[in-house]
Length: 192
Image 1 (spheres, helix red, strand yellow):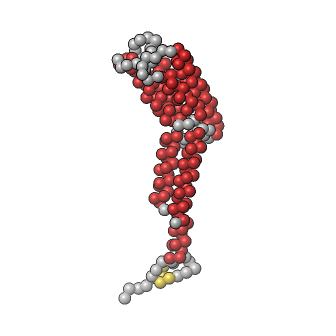
Image 2 (image 1 turned 30 degrees about the vertical axis):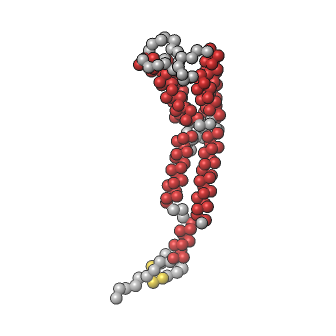
Image 3 (image 1 turned 180 degrees about the vertical axis):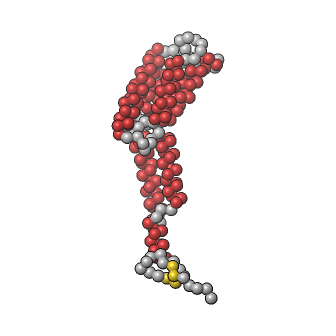
């Protein structure tokens, strides 16, 4: 017959040929399953990519981003108001109205990365539409070639899309609430 070996998981208890199930049960209750950890990390990465909030942003960096965000938003809102008061409308897409909406979203930090991405698309199209021969989004002072004002605004939106709004924004509050709700649901499912 086979020799029975002593397996000891807990040094105070020795069982012949079996593991200490009390210890295993206690450890299983204290450790989080791997699937839930992966799901939580995936939710955090999705929230970070949508809202543009990274862990590496410090308070000092966020204050600088807040200042830059306010100046860019003020520029966009002023540009939109001046465009509405001038009354020049070239295309069915009113770029002045977009400037006011996107500037307000960036100013508040409410879906700032989404507004920045939309700004990149619209102003890149506006920059190359004159050169390629597509219908223009805004009037170009030269009438031909690339629109350098649109290129500079596309670069501003690119900067905001890469850096994100920082820590002081509405997106951070929304992100915290989403993660808090996910944490509560996970605890409720663990208690069942």
